Length: 121
Image 1 (spheres, rainbow, N blue to C red):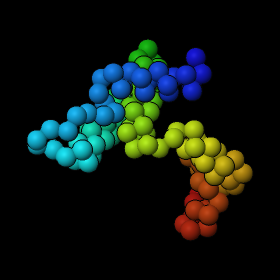
Image 2: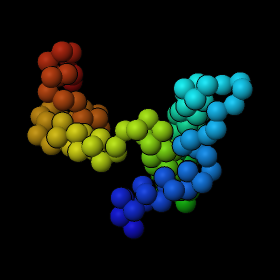
Image 3: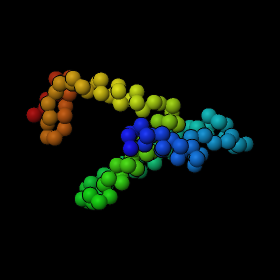
């Protein structure tokens, strides 16, 4: 399955479960409902990131792949709720990092501009 197919499948799945749109009721306006749904999805994304971190720290490699998938699912849904096209996001990200210069310090890549802003050993 390509990432594009995955994204389309997740969006269909989320739509069937009313995660992308819901009916306005007497308590909340459409804007309030959208904001609430987006906040809930962002919290779900962070919950899944926490589970990914926990699996990694505990060495639970058997569940690590599932956790990566769950993180991606929640991110796809949140982006759709915000009307943010993920393909543009990863294209922009790639353009930003493709020719980035810097160095890896203690296992973390530090871009050149940040190397000059603080002393990195």
